[in-house]
Image 1: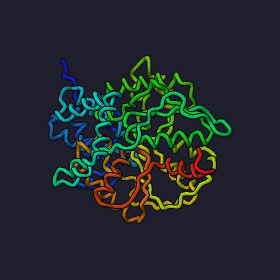
Image 2: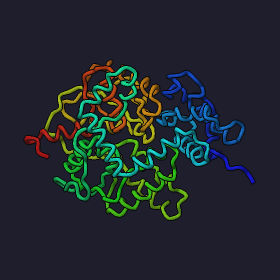
Image 3: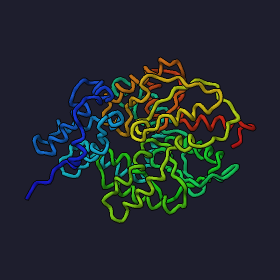
Image 4: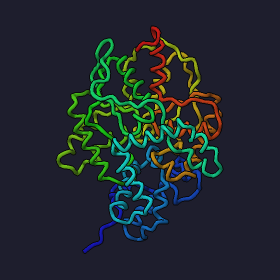
Length: 424
């Protein structure tokens, strides 16, 4: 009997790489280390070699795959159209499902499955993190030698939790449609204010906004970590919840979540019951900036007099190929001036739970990002993903820089709320 291969990427996907090397200078881990094994080309070579059983899937070999951020910058610039994100997710799923995964991989998958995917446990964790910040322990711990740097990238949780379900807002002015908001798993706790701003902006532009009660975590972190079974289970739940809601679109304000949901059809392609429904839902998913930029926006009556720089979220810029829409939203805010940073689409080092699993590389990439931000001379930083926002906030603390990190939609909301005394 043939031994089951530990890796699952298809030969067709792997064969697309022609080893031209055009991806190298766009790969954050390669530019940081200069090592071929930390490049997309090198990792694809390792994946193929293990799949063909020419080398063993040793912990040392798998470490090169694990150091990948899955930012998909290489995919966006590849002239051969190599589906790198799909290959890496399949490779990790093969490792995790084949019983050869290192202990760190299995513990990470367990945490994502048993905490992030379970709302009650996620709420408990968020409560602890909120107390950790409010008590002053975080500020104290981050000043401690050695330990401080390790704790710096622990997500900060503050503000009130976004708990709404069902009807969130009725349209103002001429109705344009009915949309559902993905509330997600981490966003309601860490950045509830972004959900609130999103709902207000959508209503101001004529949308009825609902949050289907059956929805949950999108499964993005699980898919990236190789836990395909959990990602599929979460996808099925969301397919049922959103398709039953009678909506025109699913609006997402987290780039990583939107990217995965747009690929639900691929994730559930082998599921006879859900394949067609998953494709249908994927076609309804849009990023908040993508939806708003396609409209004739309701003109903001207020003004935000500030200079802002914008950090491209990897899964918005590279996976969804959306770069212009967030900038169009910023341009629509009266008084706002965009100061572009160098390499705005280079990963900030967050990458889901990557910042906790690969602390040193995450910090190295964050330091480069903060230097680029400092060079713009601005103190307002806009992003389109909660992971990026948390990472950039950590960067401000690490470098003792003055500044504020906001979601793009928050700036548009701010201009709207200044209209007629701040009512929305």
